[in-house]
Length: 343
Ligand code: PMP
Image (tube, rainbow, N blue to C red):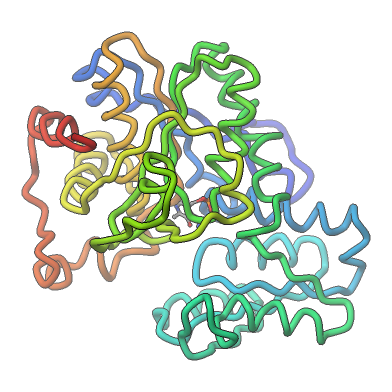
């Protein structure tokens, strides 16, 4: 993170530090490095996508002064878009499934977005929140639909920023890049950049259960999407435009039990208070390190902080009901269980 004066919110997005995860690095004999995306000004990796989508729309003349940014989103993208839009003088309308938590809706409203809750509907139906957002943008003069899943300005900003930052921060010595997929923007853009720099870099998709990206990258179909996960912001069931063309060498499915033990380990032993997708990503990074042997430099994404998940991830009753009460696994146990995934 740069310490000089930056010109406003938008210019403080990105340039996040790489944090060496001390215990997992020592235990694997590798550098396990987390890109601290939770330090972005809106609190997540999605600030980058929000900036990329909005600045691309400006450049293409789709968003003009006084315009409105419209998006269907339940999470971090809505926060990023709202704050970037505020900083640039646009309005924001967020369409959100009405089964989302009250906190999320309240948070977006507090930040200045107009929030329109709609009944939940699957992607194939016209009532799906993404489709509602698309139609709304079409019907409103001066409105632009951000379309984070299929607008490749999302992956492009990772190609232009996340990839080059990781390359420079590791002095070109990164050996692996690992990320889970929500839209696919992070994994696609970053992997494409790193592979162009050095085709020997191994790129890895870490997938939660209940998604089909593992199936897509290991088997070439979307047939396996069984199970379920508590991870938020990730878990994709279709090949979005931002997933298309992602160079992926390995993919691993990460169980929620491992996610929980890793999130609690990172908090307890590293002082890092991180959200659910970080557990999936770090598990994937450790697995890639174990598979490749000592001496690797494995980079993954620490997507957001845990503040947004207090009512679940740090709620004893909720954890018990979901059979996910942390068991405080030792480092050895974490490594042993991580080694088993993908087998
Ligand atoms: N983690 C969290 C917490 C997220 O909000 C997202 C974005 N939906 C991701 C990971 C995945 O990023 P991407 O959309 O670039 O695949």
